[in-house]
Length: 255
Image (tube, rainbow, N blue to C red; front, side, top):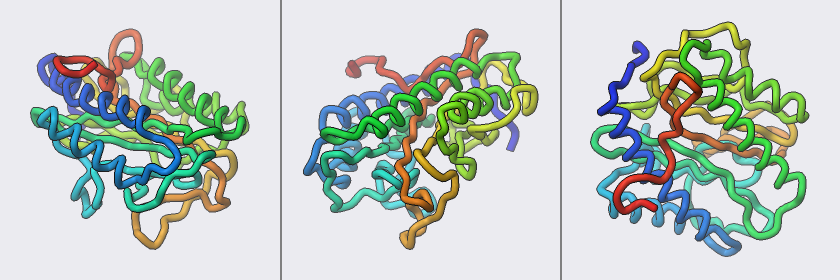
């Protein structure tokens, strides 16, 4: 599949889908605490999507059973919501995708549950920072490799494991479009970034290994050494000065 270039109207629709995703995350942040189950978070997302006339990008995707992905501690991505209750000291990555007006918005955030260790808190701060470094590199005229290079330089200097088996992706009318967006690479390589390209950029860093394995549920991906993992993601539109974040609050009814 070729990389699609979106026009202004299409990007506006993606902003609207992104605003629903952002509102779900706002509500997630207020809800996440010890004792809450991941299926409760899933229902929160479902109810919010219905409120704004959106549907889940994830539910039923290759058979995935949740409206969100909820990945706790050493779980990197694709955690299935269920009866597991959060405990103080946990970290949880919540990945939300919503479809509105035929376009997708996709954003993940990793949240602390109660009081977490300083190492875990630093992992969250640094993974989030690496996301914004990558977004700044998502500039028209740069190469695709500049995005992953920005993540890799920062993460490697901090001693973090960089998940290389998974990464970001193009997004628009489909949740997964070309190109694949790795979280490592050389700045001078890859396709030329052009205004109108829309990408989901999503660094995943760990306190240990870069190696992964998939659990018996055939979805949940974990670190092989049990080390903590954090995941931050925004949907962006390539622009002249870096990526415009589309998954942020805006629009009628969304604060």
